[in-house]
Length: 423
Ligand SMILES: Cc1ncc(COP(=O)(O)O)c(C=O)c1O
Image 1 (spheres, helix red, strand yellow):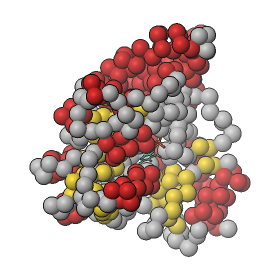
Image 2: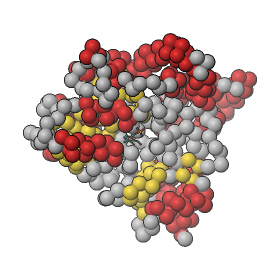
Image 3: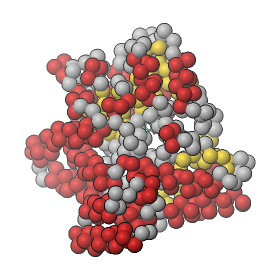
Image 4: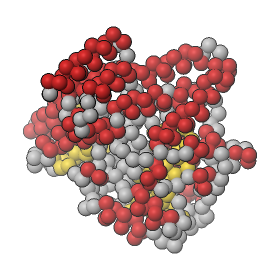
């Protein structure tokens, strides 16, 4: 580490120690990086140890399943707790009169963060709720085809399968190799599978399995030229790697904010292109007057306002790190174990090595070893948590470290995988 950076960090650390305020520490650490490149900062363990300090995680386990759900930093937990305490001082008044109104400010913050108009941004409880609003909300006739992949999220596939049983629509799934030869190959697979009966496309921005990123804009533009709406499953994309919704040209975009955005568990958003709002039915009924109001997708009955209000604090936390730095760090951690294990003849790396096609999600498969046994051994013997991901075409471990992960933890994971493979 450069001497100057060390002293800047030390000074920043000393200043922040007085405040014991995680957000100040993260901000101070960011200013101490003094204009260095994201690639440089990605390797700076002093910087990332400040970020680690902002989380109240259990230091005795190595959690490499942040893809499922991520812990929120202390600042987010504090706001959540404070608002829940305030709520119970008189829920009708405190929640309905005071806290719930703040959803409009959250909407404006979140829309600016994600890159859309606030009137296209509905705040939901998770990606499932967001995506099912779109999946059920679009009128389809018997025989109409919906196109997606066989690696899309099981609940989203189940949603269309229920519409098959109930309404006679037809779900068509395409398969693709992992890793695929190129983004162009993924695009061509979609284009080839479109027929005159295709009335809707569902595609992951980044899959939850091998973390494959799709050429969303190209797929959306191809679909638009045929008047086919596209629902993008962005459960793992927001706050994971840099992009703006306005760059994608999609019709619907659903995400969870309790994954890579570190908002409270039970937060998400649904983007709906303005011209699609009126023709899309909400999951829970809304009044006709709300037909072209994005808020109709938020008609879910009584729910805590604290959760969605604390989203703003999570956005501040992410902004203080910076999405370019975050994406570089996640790639750096992934490459550290993957480059090493790729040398082991018993290991197969199934995520793409092209930075445009992948980021923090890594996927480890095995030659001649059972992935489930390795998964269980890692957890039971060493408290290293990964996600066991079976699929009809391949099986392995999804590995998702986080911004609070240390390189020592990554190295221990690689050491223990090698040890188990020797056994
Ligand atoms: C690709 C994908 N879509 C949708 C979801 C559903 O997210 P949630 O359970 O937060 O609603 C997930 C969850 O992991 C996911 O990985």
